[in-house]
Image (cartoon, rainbow, N blue to C red; front, side, top):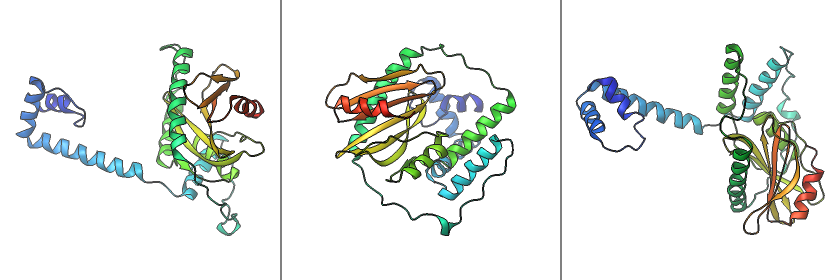
Length: 266
């Protein structure tokens, strides 16, 4: 067995594999081959470095500057507005904590519901996707790389302006937040449903956490708000516009969630 065969048989090293004859022979080759040992050592070092970099987060001013420049390029080179001076920024609003247990439970329930819906609405091979030109594809890849490199996964705040800015910065979503008496913003975080990146805006309602999911999806079928069947006391209301899948998840009466969804300006 040569080096190429051994590396192909054992890469990636963290993947579990049955110890068949080819795997045993590949491991025996690596044990006696300095070049292959160096190869896998470099691979582990790169994975460790990537893991460390992935956990690091750029400061908010840096993230905002990057996406301000991206927005300027989309506007055909229009000059970007100057950043606000530090002394002109409003003092931060009081941060509020939320009960993470219900957020996790709600995410699990809706992830299953969203997966079932998206699978039924879009069977494998059902979507026709236009092939981008090489230059356009390069821009898309570069933008996604920058977005991931400077992304912020979660923001706990009761300031609607901060949440709106987060949605625009992280997902390019210019949406109005839910409005209503006794409906108070509690935070926002990035979610991943059926392979699609979206956001979950959290509200406090009568002592309960209400989660509003926003998942961009071009070509979605517009649907009016409707309750989804669930087990237990969690209520789910889903609806869609041609570009956005949405849901409300909370331990609240279905009629209340329906009325909130019907008032949503999205």
